[in-house]
Image (cartoon, rainbow, N blue to C red; front, top):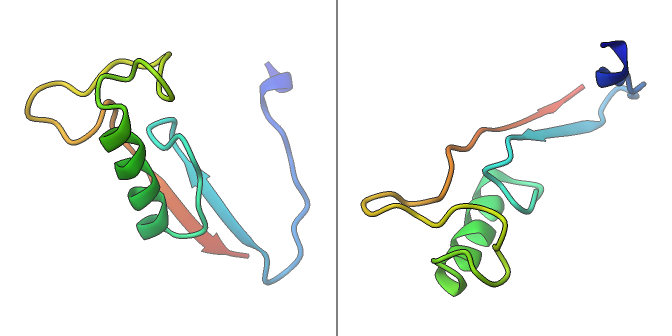
Length: 74
C-alpha cells in the first residue's frame, strides 16, 4: 500500500494546489480553474468531444462531478 503514497520535499514559501478529479485542468487559482472548467463544459456539455471519458452534466447540475480545490503556501 505504501506505493500509493508519495512524499515531496518542499521549500518554505512554495505554493501547493490540490484538486479533486472534478477539475480537468488545474489552474493557479480557484477562479481560473472554475473559468476553465466552465468554458470546457460550455463547449462540450454532453462530454462527447474534449470531455469524453466522463459522464455528461445531469439536468439541474452545474458540472459532471463534485469538486474540491485547496491552495496553500508552505
